[in-house]
Amino acid sequence: MAVEETPVNSTTRNFEAANEGTDRATVRIIAPGRLHLGFLDLAGTLGRRFGSLGITLDRPSTVVRMQRAERLSASGPDAGRAVAAVEKAATRFGLDKAVEVTVESALPPHSGLGSGTQLGLAVATGLCLLHGRDISPREVGAALGRGARSSIGIGAFTEGGVILDGGKKRGSDAPPPILSRLPFPENWRILLVYDHAHQGLSGPEEVKAMEGLPPFADTLAGHMARLAVMVALPALAEADVDYFAAAVGEMQRLLGEHYASAQGGRYTSSSVAEVMDWLEARGLRGLGQSSWGPTGFAILGSPDEADQLIREARAHFGDRPALAFDCVRGSNAGARIEWLACVEQC
Image 1: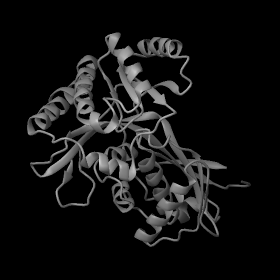
Image 2 (image 1 turned 90 degrees about the vertical axis):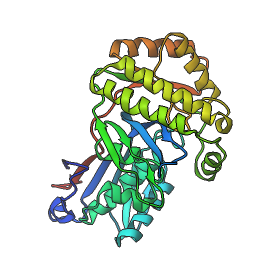
Image 3 (image 1 turned 30 degrees about the vertical axis):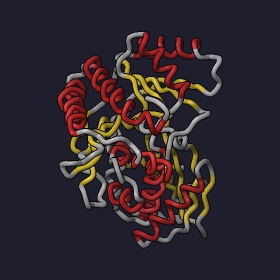
Image 4 (image 1 turned 180 degrees about the vertical axis):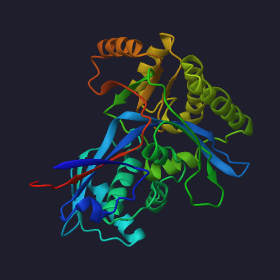
């Protein structure tokens, strides 16, 4: 089986060219997870609401394989959501939904890593590719109802890196525009803290929680915007991990306090909160929770620091079977597309 990679933002390879004479060509898409570092303006008094900062991760990721078939079928984790994404994309773009979807791996659902967006974008993009349609991830995301508040997931899928979007324009259904994309420094690391016994808010519960939040003052929105644009992004451009971590940590502290009434405290998971307190007591500043959690994170300046910290965390919290730790890099590339074309035998 031959493998050919195609950048996700260059989808002009049509089905016939990739197929090379067989109707069993397969497309495989690896879509990265992401951290959502928080919204800048929940009130939107100037006409745009939300505004987001996020980091693309090198792992975990969602991986799907797709090929044409006699009927629509899906297998693997989150197969039901994969079927729903195919049906939505097929209806929106006028495509035949008769494909076989194999979800090789999926981001943990409702964990704050963008599982729904990445699976939906991967499956819908795969369907478009198998039909030779050149449709951008932004269009695909809008068709699936993704990007309703944030374009971080779409930006992670398209090009990776650290992404700032400009918020949702009042009265518009379009995903927010991406204003900035900077690379995540190669030497930095991110400690991820999972609580496998807990899930963050989603669906109607998330909508209800958002509607019940206290007012978001203009002064708070201004401070959040300054932290993102005048501290975090310049520090990132200069590879200054201390200032970047401090800015992200302060944004997370303010947002955690704002969301406390909806999620039971600064963190959704009390176990993750305990880990974050332990990390803070060690002097770390770039701490937070991605989206509604429960996944927590710590931004670190070197592989050695990360290796030492993850060893100590696993030892200290070894009696908590639901807690898990991983040390990952930021990813400066978007989703990967692989064409698996049958050359002799599959």
